[in-house]
Image 1 (cartoon, rainbow, N blue to C red):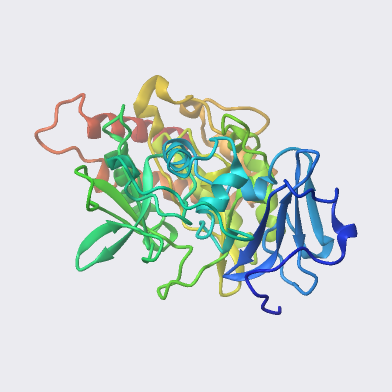
Image 2: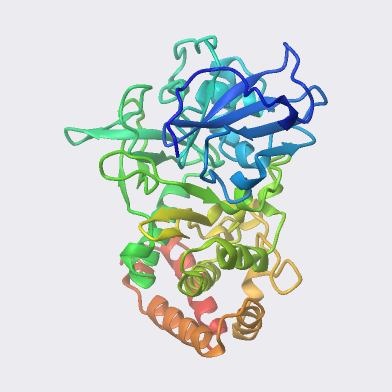
Length: 412
């Protein structure tokens, strides 16, 4: 892999392109771990194309094999790049600050794509109009050139002398700070309890590192997630979620991450993981754990492959939430199809999960062992013990009731 300068024009081999770019069509450089890998451009027909530089030899994404040279998409930005951008609250703030249309994926990446989750960056060919300085409190923490995917209220942050601060364009960005929704004050404590339970049941190394804290400039407590797509020295690690791996368009309503099945995720793990048997078992356990905690939002972006010493591996679990606690706010069916349908989460039992395990090639003995282990360890967890002063309809009581019922259902 030869290093290329972070500048330059289109490759001479114009026959790689679907349509010869016009002067008004935007172009961007795509970097992998800070080194240029190719070009991303809009086509005159309204689609896009990513073209590897001629001397680049490494895949930057599972759905973008370098052997193909160029990858076209007929309408809008290729899904691999779409899913680098933010959703929801953060996307709205970025669009407002950067004066970019909310649906303009490439425009947002040109402003905020220099530091995305994972190893891929998208940067302008030349100068881009700088974003205006923050003019209202919610815009604090929206540094030019940086973004984080996901729909929840969140921003990038770093720690300095025991205090967390919003990341700037020149600071480290070691953590993701996640806040309560304006309409729901339980998001932070729900995810904190779910991650705490996961760290106990799945083991700490198989769950993202996390803690509670606050960020300067924000008066509300938040959940602070340590980024595992960066090394201790700040180097980028390749990371792709399964909406990227399966090349699912995000959709105008960002519902593309629900377009798929857990069987498809398992098949992609078999194709791309460096240790597919180990990761298939871990995937099954992550899925079962989400069933146990009542997490009906386990979509394609909530599983990822992460670069390790031996290649791509299933990442630690993240974005865990007991959504059944929120009533009608979330669908009570599983986020993706399983065994041919969108299953009602509170009806999933051992029989269905064993059928799923067989369908994805997980030995029955391993599946039964996982179900028994997870049900036993989860039911006995201290994180399901309500505080003594809590009412019977309090948060922990209701959380624990959902989990204990699921533990009973999934025991083989």
